[in-house]
Every structure is written in structure tokens, then in C-alpha cells.
Image (cartoon, rainbow, N blue to C red):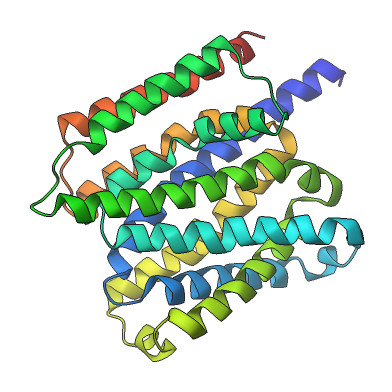
Length: 302
């Protein structure tokens, strides 16, 4: 197999894994929205990612200890754990107390555009005319969608959108800066370390601001199913697929798949939470998909 064939194979496999991860990621907004009514966001994030990390560790315990991390990489990798496993899920869960799963999925789909901006400022990737226009289109579409009055308390909904956007920026930082560590040490090892650090931070946050864990054992059957969906397909499988995708393709290439995120959030939000699918929501979704494709147009032509 020649070099071009290997690159093409990696692109196809990486794009598939990123798309699957994005689709599963969209479902987590719905299940989180379902659970935050009975479990506070900090406790939910701690339990979800703590169990996810533990399962990944147990499934790959022999592989995990094969290579040791260089000491110089421990601090930046710990910061990745703070961003992806602590800041992102906590702000996502806090936001979903106030906004809808559909709007949260739509905001999360702007991550590739946030990734482009962050990568440009840190001189990791150059920004082109296509990318600049894509960011403008996406911002316009999201602004149009977010201006819709969802209920009688618009200020609460916008508060949820703002909190969700902080989480999106944290996840974007992980996407930009994690690639070199994933390639250096491997997907599983980095993900387990990142989740371990993030879970330690989440544990501390839960002790200070969270409710007692006793509330987590008073769940109804449908809430238990929702939590298991967060941990297994929405945690273990999603994190494995995303990390593996970033090993095979660039952050910008992986970002193309994130259109699947609001799609699953909107569909499941409609089916499970009875959230409306409005005209403005459809316009926002379409603008983001178009913006992502436009930002990667030259890439796709090659």
C-alpha cells in the first residue's frame, strides 16, 4: 500500500469515526437535559466521566502501562483534562439547565469554527478567505436562530446558551492542542490520563458545589437508562472514536463531521423531550453545515 492509499484510508476511517463520535455527542445533550432536573450538573459530570475513564482503563489496562509520559508533557495534558473533562461537561450541563438540547447541539456544532479561530491565533493553522467567510456565515446563522423566543423567559434561555458556549470554547481548545499528544502516546493512553485528571477536578468541584451523591441513587428507570447512555455510547465509545479520529486526520478534517451533532440533538430532542423543530432552528443548522463545508472546501478538493 503506497503513501496516497494510506492517507486516503486514514481519511475515510478518521472521518467515519469522527462522524460517529459527533452523532453520539449530539445525543448526550438530550440525555443530560433529561437528567439535570434531578442530578446537579457537577455531580453528573463527575459520575459520567469518572465511570467513562474507569471503564476505558479496565478495558485497556495492559496497554496503558506500555509507554510512559514525558514529564514535560504532564502539565499541558493536565490542562487538556481541565478543558475537556471538567470545563466542557460542567458548563454544558449548567447550560442545559436553562436552554434546550437542540440549541445546545447547534452551538456545539460551531466548534470547528471556534477551532479555526483558536488555531489561527496560536499560529497552528492559517486562516483563509473561505474560513473567514465560513465563520461569518455561521455566526449570522446562529445569531438568527438564538434570537428566537423559546419561552416566556428568554433571559434564562440566553444564559444557558452563554454557558454552553463557554463549554464549546473549552472543547475547541482540546481539539486544537491534543493532536500531537494523541499521535505521540496513542488514543487510549491520552484519553485515560485526560479523564483521570479531569475527574479529579470534577470530584473537587462536586464536593464544593455539588449536591450529595445520594440523589444519584434515587433515579427512575428511564433516568437510569439515560445515564447509561451517557456513560457507554455517549462516553466510552464517543471519546474513543474522537481520539482515534484525531490520530488519523487533522482537527480541521475532523471538524467537518460535527454537523452530525446538532442533527442527532434536534431529532432526539424532538422525539424524547418534545422540543419543537422550528424554522429558525433549521436555518441555523443549515448555515453551520454550509459554513463547515465552505471552510474545508480546498481540503475536500485535494
